[in-house]
Image (cartoon, rainbow, N blue to C red; front, top):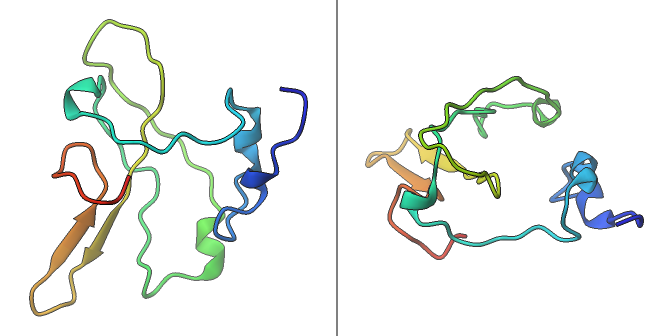
Length: 105
């Protein structure tokens, strides 16, 4: 994997070039059954998309997770939730493996 993978330079205008140090040439986007998740979860970034500034997406953060099982970790699973709380009927769209499957992977 000596060649540079340019996909990560601009993912929807977000510089994710740190991902080029990973194991795969391209990201794997797939669903994960909830019983395959072996740790608790943690929020890495919480953005208010209505009030945020463009620079808010450039961040670094510390996080920790507690493993629930003694086994090998084969991947990290990331997901996002989008809250529409200011509506008459608030709704949250989630890509979490703990929520009902949708067309989002």
